[in-house]
Length: 354
Image (tube, rainbow, N blue to C red):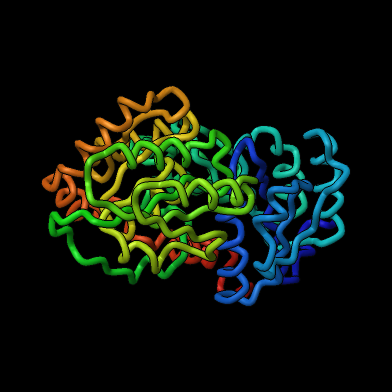
């Protein structure tokens, strides 16, 4: 792989997914895969370590991937990925993983050999990375200043990667009549929080129905379908839907975890609350609450049923908060993040490379 040899239009996207860390990074990678192919004509490959839950998530998505089946450690992963970079000679490497420091040698290898690099992270605290572009949509990053760094930093939730259809989504403003709630707790739900929330909603004395969105990657779909039949309220379940864009307008409120779906819910302007799966999600959900576009009910693994029921009931009744969320949402997340990144890629590579 010689410096300056990248005359192709190949792009490699490296990501990771598992039951433990969820499908959020993989979901974003799939969106970028389709966007870069359709909007720029790039030849894109999704690169990742083998994972059964990730393969379930990818089933039917028509994404070409290059698996690294023998990469049981980070060092082995880095060796295999560098070999792939040497073979493919991509124009651009995009990395979207939880622990970006672990893959720093591959980013350095790509940059040394003339491949442009983009790193997507979610860190709450300041994080300096040696890449061409660093995208961090965590709302806590809005107060950070990276002006002395060589990388181009794209900061804050306006840059969050989601379906570009969100840039054109319109949802009717809240009217105070709460009848249907959308419930989605991510593609893995490794804490099985969905069952607890379904039980708690059954204990709230309100006339409600639910749309439940889940994934086969959770491993519990058959059990969920059986459980739903025992609930004292109407509940429709949707499994492995390609996206939620069309579903927000079908509900009055939404309950999500603190990952990708939270950003999407805000972009849709549908009021909602979070029950978080991970400590990092708590940081994001709390910051969005400060920005008046979220009600964070708490950290799911440590939140008791009584407290959860009380907080959820109060939020459902708080029509003033619903309206504030609706009015503030587009000032915080407008759904154009992937379009903004596309513009930055054009500036990075130059018009002649697109």
